[in-house]
Image 1 (cartoon, rainbow, N blue to C red):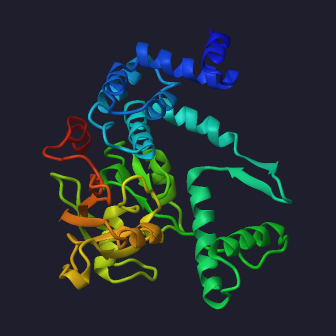
Image 2: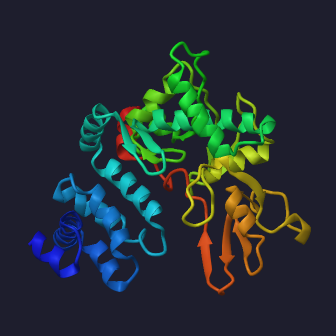
Image 3: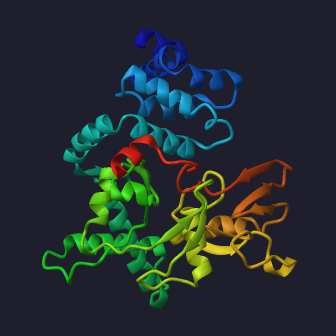
Length: 347
C-alpha cells in the first residue's frame, strides 16, 4: 500500500508511509480531528500534529485527547495545536508520558551534518530544559557583546559564542542560565499533576517541573491568578534584574509573542502598546502585550492595525481586511471547587 500511494501521489516512500499512518490514525482513533479536517477547519499538516503525538498512546487515551482537542483545532496554527495535544497527552497519560520521556532523554545526542558552501550544522538532541537554558544563556551573552561590537549581527555573536564555549576545554567559569517555567502552585506541591509550561517549548510534565524547582540554583516568583479563569492578576518582583512591575506581569501573563503563530518566548520579546501611545493608547495590562521585534515593527506597517480586547487580547486586521483574534492562554483551567482527590489528600 505504501508503494501504491507513493506512485499515485508521486512522493517518496517515506512520505507515503507518513500519509498512510496519518490516514489510519484519523479514521480509526481520532474521529473529531477527522471531522475538523473534513470541514476544512484544519489541513492535513495540522491534523498530523495530533496523530504524531498520539502515535504511542493507547486507544483510550487517544479518544480522550481527540475529545479534548475538539474545540482547540479551528483557527489555530500548527505549533499551538501541537502544544495543546502535548498538554492533553501529559494530562491523560502521565505515567506513559513519563516512561516515553525517560527513553527519549536517554537518547540525547549530538549530530553533525555537512552543508554546502563550507558550512555545517552541529545540533544537540537534549532535554528541553537543558536546551532552553543553553540558548537563553548564549542569547543574553550575545546581546551584551552586540552592544559594543556592531560589526557582527546578533545571530553571528550567538554562533561565535556557541563555538567558543564548546572549544574552550578549560573554560572561563560556568554561566548561570535562566529559563522561565510557569507552574500551578497545586502542581508544584504535588496536590495536582497538571502539566506546566516551559517558555519557548510548551507543556512539560509535573515531575520535571518539580525537579527544576528543587534545584538549589532555581529562583521563584509568585504569580497570582484568577481561580475562575486562570488569567494572571499580579506578578511579584523577581530576584534578578528585570523591567518595571507592569512589564513583569505582562511577560509572565503572555509567556510568548502574542502574534498568532509566533511562539518566541516573552523574555526575548518587547513590551509595547496594542493601541499606540501616540493614538491615546493606555499604559496598562489591558493595552500592553509582548511582541517579538519583527511583529512589533509589522503592526506599524500600512494597512495593519490592532484593537485591544482586554487583558492582553487583541483583534488584528491585515491589509487584505482579514481579522484574527488572539489572547494569552490562562495559566490553568477554571477552579470553581476542589477536586475530590485534593480533599482526600488534605484529609
